Length: 368
Ligand code: MG
Image (cartoon, rainbow, N blue to C red):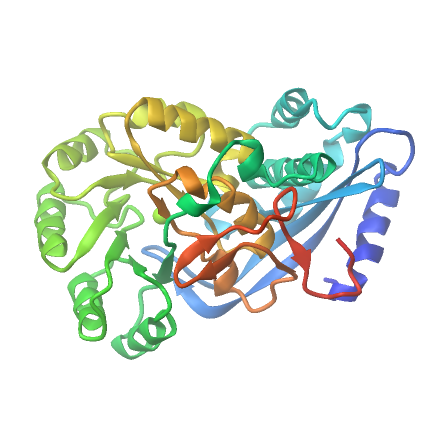
């Protein structure tokens, strides 16, 4: 693992090792990075204190684009799988970074799966191309940065004491995202409601198993000021989910059930909306297509993230102006963010006018 000042050296060694420094094509390099979490992060089925991550870079004609793969263990990717995937890439064959469709179709074809690793290439390519064009991606896509939603701040499953502490930390945020799915669901919500009346969204991470109980719970949650419910039951219970969505007084958002573009079509009629995450869908290019398709299907869209640095969060934020909800707090949940970029100002996603994905290095020795 490297310190911030060592990033350039580590990237250079990676590029040299993979023999991609020669020729006129795209030069790709990567280094492993361990994200340290501020709090133990507990979901319905797991908890952890750090997240394995890969930082990536694509260089071309004096320009440099940065990317990232965040790999929470439950998604099946790791430093080892990403290293293997990156070692198979032959990015030097591409001499024109603007051929993004061809380049990213090639990246997607190298191996199945590896969605976070693919996103790390996609984000770096977008950053590179945006920098060459001198424009941020939200402008290239024609979005109004004033239209970004508030972001939610995530509260994991925990004891009432820790929950109260986290809610106090979240005071600048205008919406809270609460993880449910264990046997303390009502206690979690009631603890939060003793402290604040801000709107809450709920993420069950497939934790509920009985559809009638789920529906009863959603009616109870509505009374408590909850605005939507994410992935209440298993992604495999399609009939139950469709039943629940039809009867629910709150929008039901598919997250685990909606990974890539093809899943958006399957989600129509089963969920009211989708949660797009770059690490699930291979990056910004497919995320933009998912957003467009969801709009055509009259579905709501939330842009989400993993625990990740300001690199991937700022990349995702480029899509935020066209999303109903944003859950872009991943960089705030880690204590060793090497970048800065998208900011949360009074709870709202606030985009910079820097080109590409709009990030800077936090260490001035590391020039971006
Ligand atoms: Mg979720």
